[in-house]
Image (cartoon, rainbow, N blue to C red; front, top):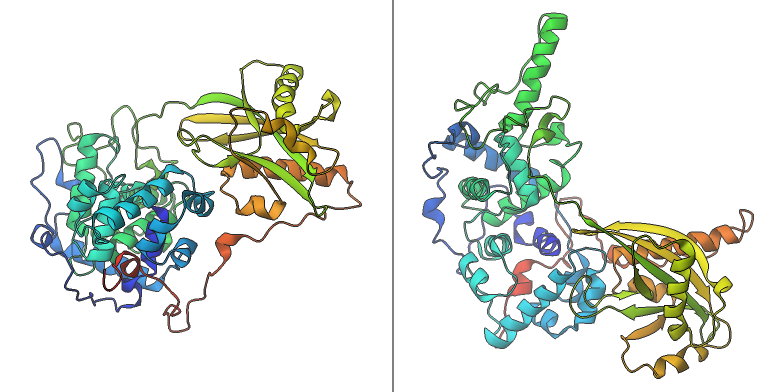
Length: 495
């Protein structure tokens, strides 16, 4: 979804004036009446202190946030250049999608994105569903947030979005301290998002909320002084109030600038309000605005260890080549490529790890490998959402010509896909961030082995993610090569 957001940033809204909205026959208006700046009735166990109840404040919030977005335009990411239309993405191979998605995490999202594109082309006559409700119902892998983002940004539907960044912004501006992942709080956050969204520029507003949380209202060390809606932030007001009290004790007087907030010390329903900080986890002055949001403690990721070998040979042109193997088509990192790897039982000693890996590598090497040729590189840690993975990294340089390391593998009845790649090809391949960490560890070993006087001549391959990043023009406009989400989703003429 981060790529969808980035694509949308470069779209229609960023070159409009602050008060102009696009006129389009495809614009969805059915939700406008429910977004006049008023929330549903407040449940008895919640307080209006945590909500936006004044239309004037909502309008000011929208105006300031949209002005900030106008001053901070975003550029199109690479996938919009490679696949400028939905039809182009549908024709791409999963391998191509994985290559471009590599390093972004949550790799199944790239696959689901392509599956959705293929369904639109093959089953929906190339016409994207135009409302959040239809998007959720008709497209695989599209949830409430994704549907709201697409519907508002591309089709102008007046609906909010709630992702991790928006949750952080809303919880801070309204001092919502209850568990933000609970269903009741999630529902209230959606109500807040829907009440705030600008009916004239819903897509721009949602982009601004997401970008604000990603770049300014960050989890740690938020840039409060740069925030365009800081005067609406009750968490910040609470911090200022504490500083005011501390200053009065020292100096006898202090300024206080939170003009639009009520008495920020307490919610009127403190003790019974289901949105306040829980009594078991009260306000921590050392955290400031980072007291919000609160989430239930996550289950600790399980620990796993994997032995990985960077297998190197001389290619047909004399350049180094490295073996990468494709992972299964389902499960963790499905379909991505990695160095030959083997899961280890916890508690194995280094000698035992070598023996287990050596037996695994023999099949790929195509030659007898003495134990002493397997060099220990080090350990690399990577945390997935539910796994703390430690890669025990080894390297092995094969002798002989480039044909040697193929004979024994051809006799294997069941083997994953594999290929030999150069360093530059590895950098462009569909490999995970974890494997790139393994590569860096291997690269450091090569450099250190040459000694400090010789240096390391291996050059890092060009970063493809930086290709095509353009400057913003002096007048604030974007170059004409920019692609928008509208153009991406629009069916070609004649279809």
